[in-house]
Length: 247
Image (cartoon, rainbow, N blue to C red; front, side, top):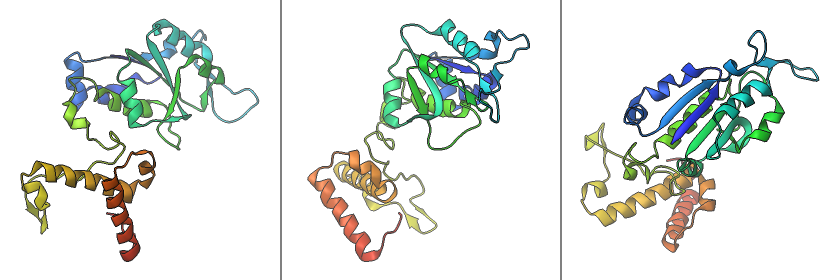
């Protein structure tokens, strides 16, 4: 995979590319990553890439020309162009899985007050991290790239992310490590039993419980077995009898 980022602040991505598993994956040649400063494509005499908005208003708006010329210089028939914008579709794990199979991703990072509306006509996807506004698209881009890159073959072990939160529609089950007892709090006995079937059942139920207590909206799109429904009904009954408590 190759990722190209159009940005006015290339150094923003230094941390992503030079830290932890992403750095190791880059050093091992598992992906290509380039950041292109589209200021270098402007035809404005003084290097401007933005101008005041038509109709008046606060702030400056990124112009079409430098952004789209930079895009045209790297875009191929195998490229998927993504515009980072608060108006885009909210990014989710399922989208990361789909994008990790693409050959070439191009991200456009906006800045200032916004960008010329006509830029939207040249992209394949519009994407957002959530219902909030950032100073620029770089921070959102870094998060999305991190999420995608860790799914590439060889970056981390596949079984390390297959049971991540959202991978199967549920939040991840609780995890424990040494010591067995800390400050009077003990690791659940089932995890020490060595009984793999019981451990698997416990983890699935805990994932259901985590999702029910913290993100019940996710359950609306998950296919539940009869056993799952019975377990969730027991949780609901417990909440009704003892009060709803976040766990």
